[in-house]
Length: 370
Ligand code: GTP
Ligand code: MG
Image (tube, rainbow, N blue to C red; front, side, top):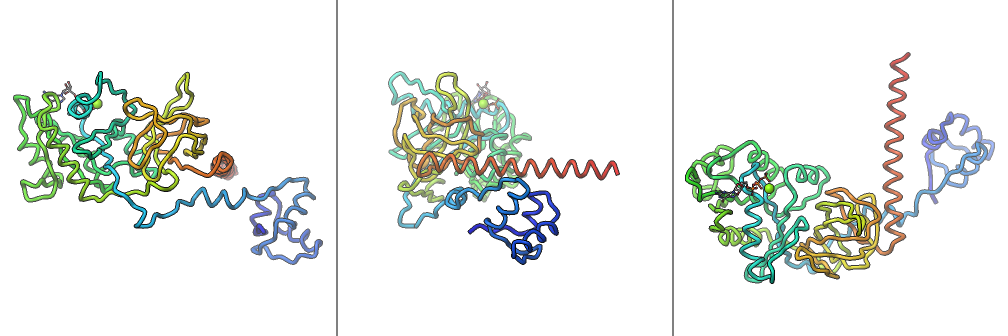
């Protein structure tokens, strides 16, 4: 059964441990302050103080909360790369993504209207690449702080007429810290003032030695505006992805990460989720950060309803009871009850931590007054 140390139990009841030990002796239980007593004994004592105590949530739930099964090598399959675009303000990140979509998406799709869900997929020679549109520096930092590795490859956009700027350096440091391979897109080569060589030199000054200079960093000169050399950039992405040997197990419960989330008037909480491992299906029960739900619908980057999302797929999901945070992890679980229990546990833990913090503050304040 469940055990609790006498001292912890006394602390919880806010009683003197000696008082608890005396009561235990009266019950015929000899226990020192650092010894454990079982739930039944603790419950009897608590009742004397007219305090209700509960067993922890079922152990099953505690387990699921932290338990993510490791995949065996034989279950792993190749998965598409997930790519984010970073760089200094106005260097052409959005234009580059637009150019990529234009060359690869619109030419195929009737009407050519692609609704943004914070992610887009392109296909080259039957190979898929997933681009995350949103993670700018802040989102990237927030996700990294939560230990969420969302991207496999970073595209660093540097305007050839402006060169390496503060946010370029920031992006380099982010990528280094996250150990993500970087491909440099030297953009705006169509501009009269463009000087790609200067960019290469400045990159070298910051430890990014490109291939031409004897280093390992791939740099591709492009013009997002003119759509120049975009195919070449895409090829390089696939090349780097191949070297990374990206794999996942499609035959397991889904694990993903929230890219962005909002409250939609009609649809309720809506979250764009990148599936990193496993397969998510409509109807699956999920835990997402401190909320849960059952996947009601999934919409892909082409605004189509889908019922299945495999690894390295970004989809917008509805059916959560609240709006999660960017960087929250999604985990598919057995059933709604399990999902709700896990969330209840997490919220309890947060409340306990907050209570502890506030008690500490009031104690500190008390000492200051003394
Ligand atoms: P933020 O999101 O504000 O950080 O900017 P961004 O990096 O997304 O840059 P954006 O794509 O908005 O481009 C900024 C400006 O540069 C726009 O006026 C673009 O039209 C222009 N621009 C982008 N790429 C090119 C290019 O290849 N050539 C030229 N001449 N202009 C470009
Ligand atoms: Mg932009």
